Length: 194
Image (tube, rainbow, N blue to C red; front, side, top):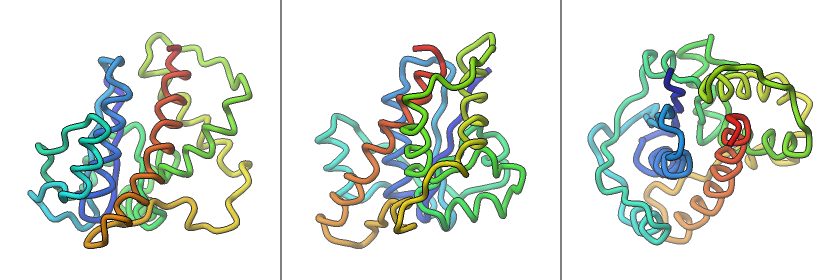
């Protein structure tokens, strides 16, 4: 059974598609993982802005085929993990589908939880397949997230929005996003047993 990750930002042209593409590349070794993205106020049909395309290209990722789409309740319900780019997006997802609370994080929030769990063996997840082990790991992360010290500045749980900003802000956003995505990839890979 497929493990589906949904990344969410506002317009679905900057942060969430970059996260989607980086996650898809990092989890490509798992044939039963699907990564999608959507926006709470999507610029439907729009592509990724040039500054973000250049950053992706420099990282070996082609984002030219992306087309923005609107977040829907069905997308949230179908996702096993929802990674919001900021707390406002996490809130919007949970308001749309309250049952998604335990599987919705900001990407930097889950990265913090994942890093705190890195040193712990965590629970032994008895499951027949990688997808089931990933689902169990997400629920475990939700269960411990309240025990992880919060950052002094809550904005450290968000990825800065580079939309209509300078190339420098795009670079800052990318620099916040890439290590968080790498931590999530490592967490899910460990959980799956790879």
